[in-house]
Length: 462
Image 1 (tube, rainbow, N blue to C red):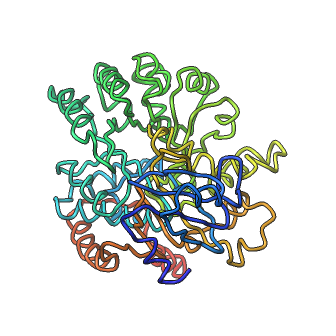
Image 2 (cartoon, rainbow, N blue to C red; image 1 turned 30 degrees about the vertical axis):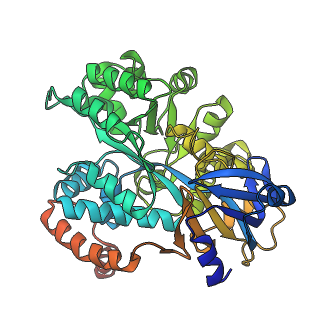
């Protein structure tokens, strides 16, 4: 597609799009067109039919392109983008040594820049929705909302409600205020968050669960991520983290359990029985975790789950590939399972399943009339995809963000060939480079391992 096509797509009025194929839940389908109007899909149907029912619209033909739902990142930390490279080679639970000090060093400007930088990377990777688990920066969480809105990405915005150490009596009121604050916002959807189960009192765990359920929102909690966390829960409560959350009445469809990698059989049963959702974060497992979530078992049991980056790297296709790859290494090889979800499972949970897990299943994640027009135009003429006999598998195994021509959120084109259409992406990167350097110098970050180059020098010297 050329720049003329870009101009046709970057219009405020209704669009009639005619790609080579549309990715529906049942698979890629040719011969379909899509009408985009007022930020939503106005219609999805055969080309001739929509041209007949919408004669006032000139069809924008998109040769060589697949139109597919945008990816949903079910777990992110937008204000941690300045420390992404600090996590490499580090052992688990680095939040104590890296993330808490780094976010504590952010002011309003640096928190905004960090969040917008993360949103930019996410858009480049085909994510149209990110789920932020709450910032520890001492700023109004609206700074993060503003950054997401300015970047043009849909955001499920967490407010941390930890009160176990502070005994802060204002937490319930703040939680209720946060849930009401973004009522009617086109892109920002409020959520509550607790860092880990032991970070909040039992009363607050119950209260946030009730508030979120009543508001149709989620409560995000890091659960069963590391051995240390499981052991702390056993020592303190005599129960594993998920068991403890069930004991206090916090499990349910409103809960989004981040990671959930170390699950006993009873905990899998609890997830299935209560309708609790999970964010399966395979790259985080590989980079800094103790285990891989049993996502295949979750899928078999009907447990709701999406895929999350945990802020590792913002490429939706590589996330889907990591989801399949981690299951194959952790579970498929020992069982002789060569399919491990047959490709479509990971696309499903990276889009529609992810939207459901983060509480937006009735709003985004699917190409259907009335849903938010959050979608990607993917070039399928490249060497990786052009010869495909099974496009869903190819998208999982061989797709990457370089193949994304355009990203749309709420019916508006936000990126064209990796660059924002409404603001200066390279300028933001230059600003972030300077702001990040200053923030890292202020933060009392403690790394266990040296940088790669320092490690090589040490190894060579020995």
